[in-house]
Image 1 (spheres, protein in one colour):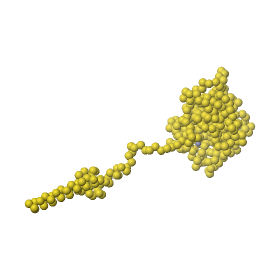
Image 2 (cartoon, protein in one colour):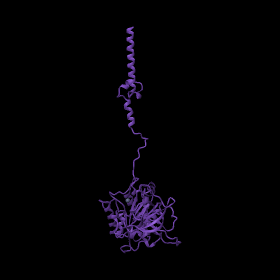
Image 3 (tube, helix red, strand yellow):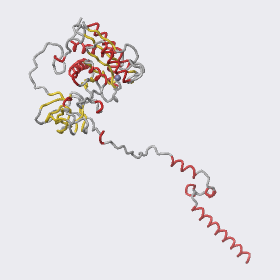
Image 4 (tube, protein in one colour):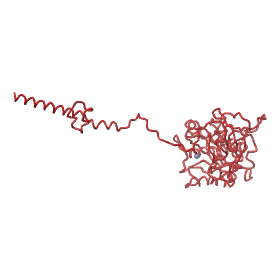
Length: 402
Ligand SMILES: [Zn+2]
């Protein structure tokens, strides 16, 4: 009996020990992942504890990343480009923008921009005011998305609407600018009866210009220039055409700025009557078309007439005509003593200072797929551009056909 009781006591102790053991293993961290295997629970270095965290550390590709704060500096904020479609319904003289420009809260190029207005935006002039630099500005009304809005644009950016007088049937050559033939170039500069044209194929050598779809701008510019020169000299009398470069080299190999300066020196040395710089634009691929860049100041009207004639001939090939633009330097150190800003484009400014009527032609947007394929992709297409330039130049100079 005594032996029996003792055996029972041992059994109870054993059962208790097992219960304690089981209770302990249930709290142990490995248990839940590992199911019922007690051995695995005791050995902490076994797989489950390692596999799980690895999965957690790998970033979930479907998770949305935390958005980063990219604050827009207030001064640089320009709302999306919107186009004034029709004249605002208010009284005042009508005008259209002769270049892309900004619509501002107050007169002055240092004033806040409200919208960037596209070339040919229609405005109604409500008032003429002066900026702090004595520039003439207009308070205007424009239509943006059907709403009339008020603001300021610089007067020189606005062509005044002409009163709708019946146009007499003209048999003469193509209209220049507003149809004003006095804008046509007068007697040639050195009075020898021969017009001198300097064509300036942009970039060259180490300065490649833009490069897209396997083409390099410097080569395209040269191809257009050569075609233009050949067409002018073969088809018209009393014209001589020089190129600032006839091969793949820069004019000044060291600095881009000096290079531009040298190009104008070349044109001036030849006593050029006009200078046309030939380029292709690449503005992010959004736009399509050709654009003329012209100087401000005294030579603006003539240069714009020249540029417009070239653009009109490019338009005949199907190229979108983006019109002319004169870029002002927005930095005050580039302003004239009267506060008027100088030309932003060095070629425009330096050639105008030499008295040379000039423009820069951006023939098409070479980073826009359809512009590139339609107008830039083969030597034949580039030649057509050069011929269009030549016809525009010949019309401007009123050259006689051979
Ligand atoms: Zn260029």
